Length: 289
Image (cartoon, rainbow, N blue to C red; front, side):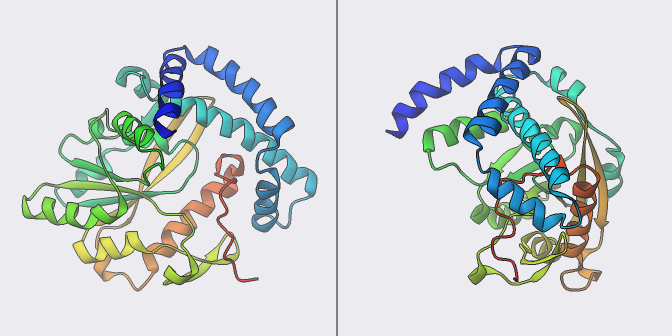
């Protein structure tokens, strides 16, 4: 069944991906009506999350954020399809990495870049051409459909990034250390761990929740600098990504200091433009009530 699903839908996704952006965004507008107004996909989850994160806002204000989020959510799906075939030149006009010298100033020290599920994190795997001195590795969660997973992984790696699943990141780092290959490792660090795996509970958007600390542990164990990638949606289909150094010497930081620094940076982004966070994710499902 998974193969049949792949055979039916992936060619359709490829055809859609070659359409110009103006046509794709017209399709996104139609999908928005379907998802937000008719199906109301996870709308209760979104509004519940917004009420937790912004208790001071009125229902009308949170509804406006939700509405804007769903428009962005549908655009994000379309932009993910476009990533299957978009050229490097076209992408460089829409997804701009600023202040790349921040990385060059740290070279040849290994770097972990961390971000949240904010704006368009999918396009971040296009960073390798901006960092020719580094080997770029990204940690990703594989899809349940192995055929789609293979195709999507190939697409995400088109610009030179190597994708690895979480359990393979440790041997990957060891191998690169052994071969003395300066490397950059990318992780999205705002997922919600299970309660039994939670090592650290702290506040995120004013709510105490379990928090992943893998980025901090990796950085300290392998002495990697840590950089937060701040995303800004300039306008529809256009983004700016700015690196902000959290620490060049992680071993000198206190326990969970880097984790807290990351969360504060992400909170700042969300509060500035909350509609671009991934509100359909049950980030606060294990919160302290």
